[in-house]
Length: 376
Image 1 (cartoon, rainbow, N blue to C red):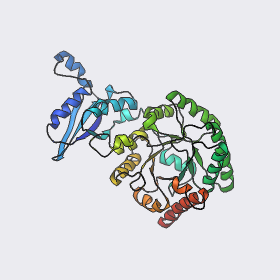
Image 2 (cartoon, rainbow, N blue to C red):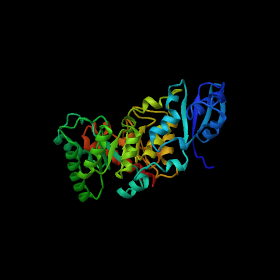
Image 3 (cartoon, rainbow, N blue to C red):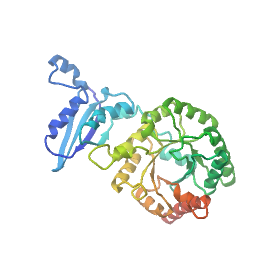
Image 4 (tube, rainbow, N blue to C red):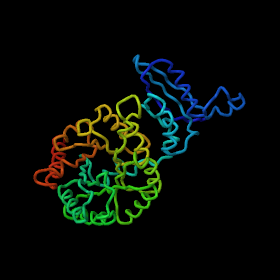
């Protein structure tokens, strides 16, 4: 009988009693108990029972084991998946989820990205360099006129994309729909003048119902991409927006994820949380801390996220956004480490240029073009 399974692998900071611990998790996270169930009932529950997979101990102080969770226990939702593989277990002492393998029967029930690398390259007509994005700063309290001026300055610097700051919620002075109409006009004028396509990604926020409503109203006003913080709003919000055929590119921001991926014996491996899951949910670009910015993560972790976003599979490859403290001087290193299928994403470096925001954006774009021309 075909009984596909999700395989979750865990690490614990000890080597003793690994088989016993793994067996306890396999039973407890699937059917709750086993030995106190009568034999007739046990037979009917076999297809729901978790099974222990590989067990290893490469070092005396680190044990590793995997559990096979039957897909029939799950719904095609992030809440279901994460609750089964790491819900209550995350509270049960020092244990870290370090790998997650999903069978195609389960993965294909998620939407995945609408564009990904191939779609975004085709949309922009950009094929031999990274994308370049600047970030609004000082949005809180800005009037619509101030927003327009700041957006114009960034676009005049030649960047492909401008996104809201993730902390931007209170927009009474520069309402969402007005921002979208303004940016469409500015971008259309630039496209007519230079032939360069550009996009604006407003911050999509609110309760689930508000986010769905805001997304639909924004699309009617001409929105062509969104910024979303799925580790705050919930990954299933992104899943549902994509299932409703909202097919503009989504940029996933890593806000709140640091409390889950921290470098310790608890939590979730960064490549799962910031790589596998947002790609499955439908992100086209995933931002994450770079190894050398102002909020850095270890280089192996950043590269592992990038590999997850770009590994061959059911869904299109996703654009990586190694971020935080990025400036023109890091462009060569970013491209050397991550290749061209990334977005060079900067905020303070653009706006703090002594000659102004437009000059800062131009310096960033010129650095990308120079490195890529030198690599040609």
